[in-house]
Image 1 (cartoon, rainbow, N blue to C red):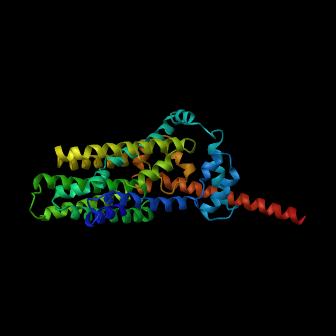
Image 2: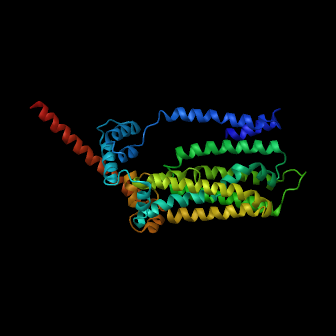
Image 3: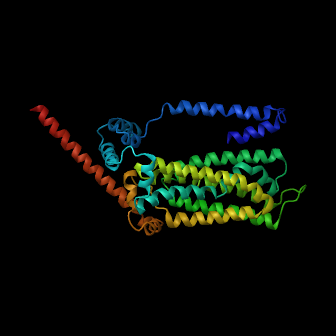
Length: 366
């Protein structure tokens, strides 16, 4: 968001056309980098990473800090027990061992490959075509002038940041992962198809003002980022981390992010060529990809909202596709039964802890 307005400010200032035009934006990037570095020093280590390294006590302390509960809380103790049990015999796997483990059976392979496929489709929504080339896209729709294009791009950045934050706070858990992806893909498809069809039927002409359909096409650019920012923007990261088995999570996330950046590069290189050669077909293509994103989310993605991390593997145990389709109906979602099972386990753990504490009290009195 800030980078878009930095570009707008630089072009509009007296430094435009000088060496400062690139030096100032380059230097300004150091500020958020320094803030990020300082923030990292206060972050908690992942309890699962600590268990993987054999530091169980440190993992318990990390969990108490993350959950904001006491060290003897039944929920914390149960979660730690489940993490330890999940890693039992699979600690400190090398990258090659993780690669072999990821192909050990159909369930683990599906979980690992799903993270890669999600990142693949995320890039083919066309989001980075707008991120990188929005001034050119706004110009192709009919918005004239470099400064106008850069300012419109800045507003695009604001919308993206705000909706992403609101989506993560109010949609990811409350609305669910599947519905966020499906609704996001449907909205993206509508926006891209409209932009493509409008550009085909009423192409912009230099020197002419914006028509009513052209104005709505610009609105559709913002509609695209609204739907993307609570769906295919953040959710693939959430699902990739949630659904990756603990013992191969580092490999899975590495492959997923490698896929994301690879196709980020592909999009960055091909979109200018596409805009020059197939023009409005660029938007039709991304709209069609969004339809495929919708189908993939509806058929292949299980609903994980409310499911404890150590229980997510149960969503992939048998009949993965059938179960994912079943999750489309709220009343049949498997997440409810898994969450209920987890709550029952917490209650049982609480009874065990209480019984142990009572026994300790009796021994102390005696």
